Length: 117
Image (cartoon, rainbow, N blue to C red; front, side, top):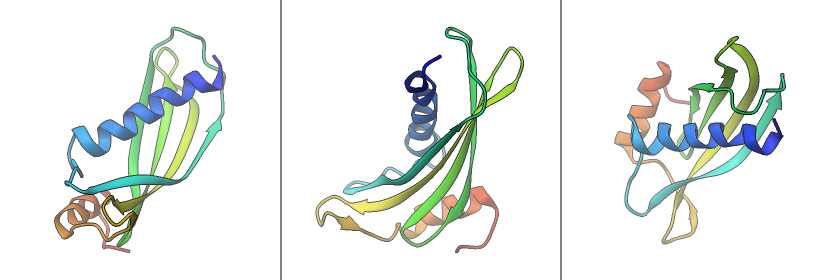
């Protein structure tokens, strides 16, 4: 399967994790933007096979957070790709980075189970 097709499940999972499922970081006027994204491809997948994307938050700071995603081919549970992402909180009106609202940051901190960075 071509690389561009392997990226789509990572992007979908990232969006769902942040905006559609808990912790739901959607706040009017504030968005997150990707500051850094790397994907390591470990194994070629066959087109049409179902995939499983799993991820976890790894770090939360005042204005950013990091998370990892792993994609598996479900038939064999072979680890096919790893994505590492850093996202920054961005205030749309000021067009500048901003601190996370305290309640959103606390939700993210609880998800990784550590004290804030």
